[in-house]
Amino acid sequence: MAFEHTATVVKHSSRMAWPYEIRGAVPADEDQLLEVASYLNTVNLPHDREEIRGILEHAQKSFTGIIKDERRREYVFVLVDLARARIVGTSMVIGQLGRRDAPYIYVDVFEEERYSATLDKHFRHVVLKIGYSYNGPTEIGGLIVSPEHRKKPEKLGLLISYVRFLYVKMHRDWFRDELLAELLPPLEPDGTSHLWDSVGRKFTDMTYPEADRASKKNKEFIKGLFPEGAIYATLLPQNAQDVIGKVGAATKGVERMLRRIGFRYAWRVDPFDGGPHFTAATDEVTLVQRTHEARVTRLLAPADTPKTRALVAVETAEAPFFRCVYTPWRPSGEAGAELLQDAAQHLHLVEGARVWVLPIE
Image (cartoon, rainbow, N blue to C red; front, top):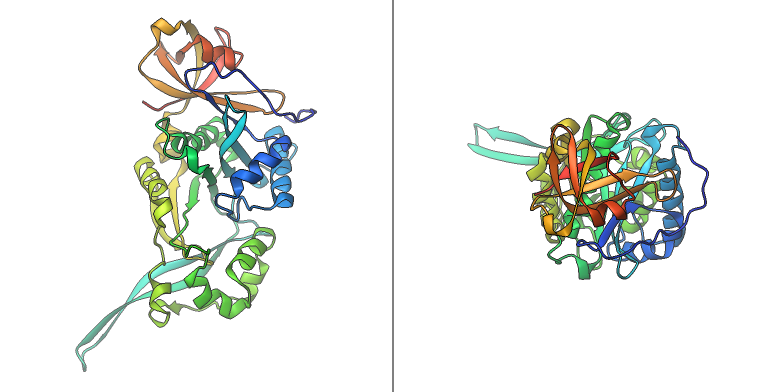
């Protein structure tokens, strides 16, 4: 359902035990989201004001349902430090990669063995072949946390990452049966991709940043200019071979998290930088399985704080349309939930209200 509204930044009290909130992004977040984008500057969240403005407008139309085709929706979540009223992290869910007007483009990676009996020589070659899908997966992407918040004991990176799986379960029929996460490979400090310089640039005459940015709007040039046949990685410089399917040091933690919840390397990589694609069947991801709807059966005083914690989320008819906190909770009976009073107050909940819960610990 679409709602008419005026987008505003939502401010709340920071008296909760967990002084953060995860919510849907709104157009008024432009300046702060632009700052967060500067920490990584990815194709999903580039450090460019016009791009950020367009992403936020698209996200608002996605949350409100103005975009009728669920496959074209893109949801942006922001992590807010309530005490400072500052956005310190973000993540995204992209309804579907791969449509007739914008195919999902990847490079399959496989091994080919060669043996000569005459010479008694055996070789194993890594082979790359570009592929296309017009009916691809839902993408879990856009994960960025400000450097000063990455090592905080609250595990903020995990929580802003986990919230995407909670949202997928909330609206399971909007999303595909396969989830995809593209991880960054090792890049040079200046952002150079050795694989792109060795392959892509030869066929497009574009730098890596130019091609990466252009592909966000139109991928036709890849299909039109890239070779259709196999490319033997053996023929590439060693520094290009070394990054194929490898995970960059800054992304190792994300890889561990994905493997832990059910993702596996798909033997596919990004055609620009060789970063690995990790995939999972949506309904087999543990975080999706654990997320459930519940009814608030009791509001707890601080003296009765449970040891178990969960992400607890609600949807609202006005901006920001989605709000979530990480709070102590306790299961109650069949599909019931007991919540701390401050968390319930923050989310404007009363006993009997419906919430979505993703137990964490």
